[in-house]
Image (cartoon, rainbow, N blue to C red):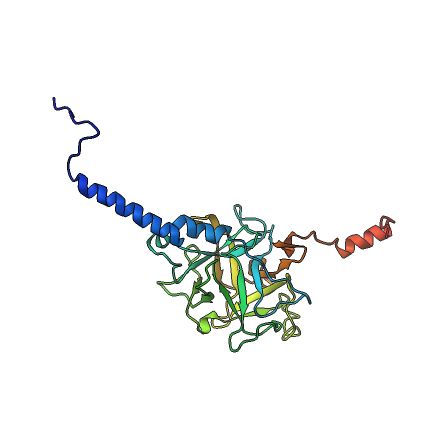
Length: 298
């Protein structure tokens, strides 16, 4: 019966090549670590890189503002299993491409996440389409772009969409997909609309209130940005909801809550939080009831 008579100090086989290979691997690892190109470093930059949102002084959204796109909580979701709470729109790089490439992939995917803290992957910038309008108020019916850097200083990606085809559609619902690209084109143009269809034409041209429910429609395809709380995507950030471009209407031809979004700004009391963290004021009917019952001490 053959036995291994060699001790651990004996060099057998291609020991010299193995030593050089280990040295090259270590050298490559140290070089990527110093340049911040390791996968865990890129993931930490996307997930833990805290961002500061813009704070509005007049209550409106302006070109150049840094905001979060949040789909408000919808407890009446037509599904047994779904993601509850407020969902923020986030960039979601492909896990395999993140291993193979040192930079963010283009096009890059999107998803909706239960996250209220502004970080690199969910902080968008309101950009003008035709000219530099930084500081001007964004109005209903105006074209605008949504850009995101993902925590990187040398990369700007734009929220885009296009008609679905047999080879290009969303992963779960097979509807029109939304993605991030670095190409500037008419595919990047979006418009905001008032949620109530009976007042939509009257609000055309009015400034958009910050932290208020709006509709975000794609100009080229006339499809509304929507969050699928019941359709999950498995990413290396965890379980997240699918985001598509599709308009959902109820029996009254009114957009459903999955098409509702808010452009959330920063909290002036705490730079690291958002306006969603502030306590909501009591409803008007509650105040009236308290006054009628003599409970209002003011």
